[in-house]
Image (tube, rainbow, N blue to C red):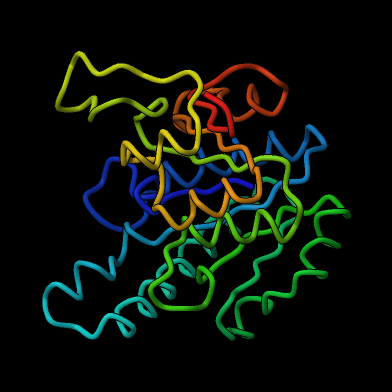
Amino acid sequence: MLKISGESLKGETAFGIDPTAVNYLCEQIGEAARLGVQIAVVMGGGNIWRGEAAESRGMDRATADYAGMLATIINALAIQDGLEQLGVDVRTQSALQMQAVAEPYIRRRAIRHLEKGRVVLFAAGTGNPYMTTDTASALRALEISADVLLMAKNGVDGVYDSDPNENFEAVRFGNLGYMEALNRRLAVMDSTALSLCMDNDLPIVVFDVFEPGNLGNILTGKTVGTLITGSD
């Protein structure tokens, strides 16, 4: 399971979707699919809409979150188109009913697509407000029995003990335990998603998706980024 943040899709732009970033991400996903790996992707929507920011300006939280789900569908369609242009067989499933542009999320159908070698894009998070796309990625990973959850970051090559953009002496972890990540409140993913992974012993790899070859290296067993498991 690959989680791609909305921030990754905006590339060098301040907002929206950067075609160059989309093309790069699709090339990386396409290479992974050609390795014979069953790969599913959960999309974030922060490049278009952030529910928390809208709530802070007075918008109803549930309504703001639903708007964010729609943003993830836009991003999924951009990735879908990019993959299809590369000749990759892909299906988009949405947790919100959006039959004109995406299949409804059905677990058994998603698993069947993966078995047939198709890339599956999961959009609209869990379909519920108050749940982040981090939680959606952990949930969907468990539902399809994924071996690992890959958290693709933009410009950050793993988990650090402090913000590496502010502290030049920040130390990157090679391996990290779930409990330490939770207790230290490290910026890995939200606590609900991390707890879900911990409770079900789902390994997490945090890596820089824009470092060429990283995704393929992870899938071929090489050490990249930070591995989060049940032991330090």
